Image (cartoon, rainbow, N blue to C red; front, top):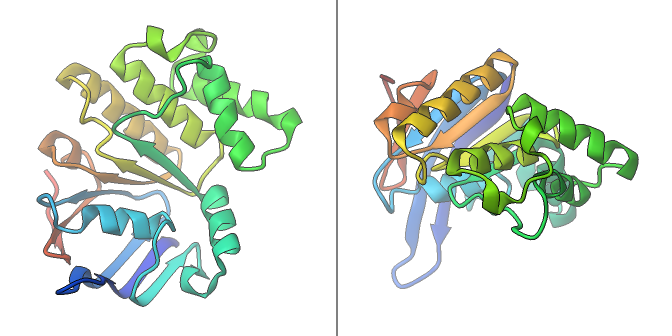
Length: 226
């Protein structure tokens, strides 16, 4: 299995009195098409790890390679470009623009990723169809259910055709039935070859993953899912 993500002895220390070691000697390899859940208590380093994987933050020490590229050796501009080309993000709060249609929300994400204008609408429509929202393309996000909003956010991330999809508590605002529906979609995406990383507090979510890792005080350990 080709690794998409490789972390070697990664640490992240935030300055202060005293300094805070948010990540400590993290080693992690995530293969292409793998589904990984990250669990841990509040303050354990999950957000720091997700920001590192998403090229939003740099490790203080160690090496992070994304699709074989040493992220630490890149300039800020090249790191931003790599993030736009290879990584999709889905958050608990959806972050949809209420004054745009669902289709326009997905297209907006492609503008930031510098997708040519002639391709944006086609890609956005395909992504909405992929997540089962083609019939809601011209709706306002205000008129969608919570589950539909999360699927719209998924479509926005998927339209950029990322190698890695990072989800931060994606089911936190959803009821159990809607959560199951979203998890079914995750399974379909992974079956299609997408690499998926989900930060979650919910056992229902982590049980569906191929692998489960846990962070406690910045130290990562592998757990048995389910």
